[in-house]
Image (cartoon, rainbow, N blue to C red; front, top):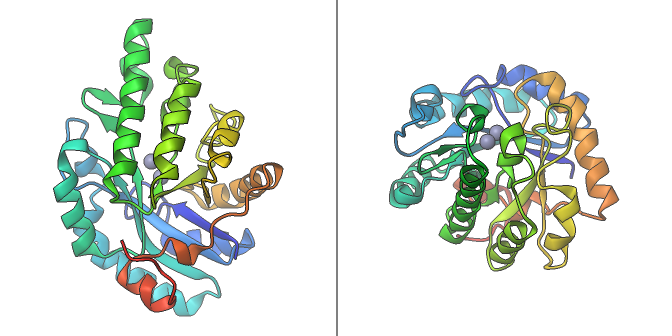
Amino acid sequence: MRADLHAHTTYSDGSPLPAMCRAAERAGLDAVGFTDHCIAVGDDFGRRERYDLTETYERRREAIERMRPRTDITVWDAAEVSYVADAEAETAELLAAADFEYAIGSVHFAGPYDYTSPGQYVDASEETRRAAVERYFDAVVAAVESGLFDVLGHLDLPERMAPLRGYSREEDYERVAAALADSETVPEINAGRVHESLGRVHPDPAMLDAFLDRDVAFVLGSDSHAPAEIENRVPELRSVADEHGIDPLPADRILTGRAGASETESAPSR
Ligand SMILES: [Zn+2]
Ligand SMILES: [Zn+2]
């Protein structure tokens, strides 16, 4: 099955759901997962105010239900949930209440650091930049160890930002790989900046062997916010996977929510 597990609709910062579905069809996919942004608690960076799927997931669920008879591809009702270290209990509650088919856990910020915009690092010292990146990987390891998420999102996100690029070290990837090898959480190959600033997928393809050596499996996520992005990024994801001999993990291993469990008998419990 050719699946893209990471796409955004107007229920967060993406494009209309029907248009995203049509683009997924044109990209030759068998399945697409809508993973709008979700966060269990407010934070200093205003993400909850901007992307509040916590308030709208039921409406989005109805929109997905309306879409399903109108497309041949499978549409998953999922979420990209920001990991917040001191809100694991609230996040677990949110996930239990919303019962998404699967959840991507992403570190978008940690403590004082925002990893979605370069502003705060432009004038920062080398030490601050490295500290920000180290803190990021601490949070990624904690997100994996929390066991809250089915998928780990874009695992070297700081590399997207020019001032933090090159501050991720091999040892950072190694400790994430070790945590993943011990966990049910599966990382994604993420194409969110494959044609833009970064010009490659997450994680760094130079580091993929560190994961493959530990038999870490991957899923594919375009992280598209616009229809054209799905069409342009899906072929890139496939070529990276082929190049590294990666066979994406079958989606029935990821679907853990109620709807997912009804679609497949082999869905693991979490
Ligand atoms: Zn993200
Ligand atoms: Zn995303």
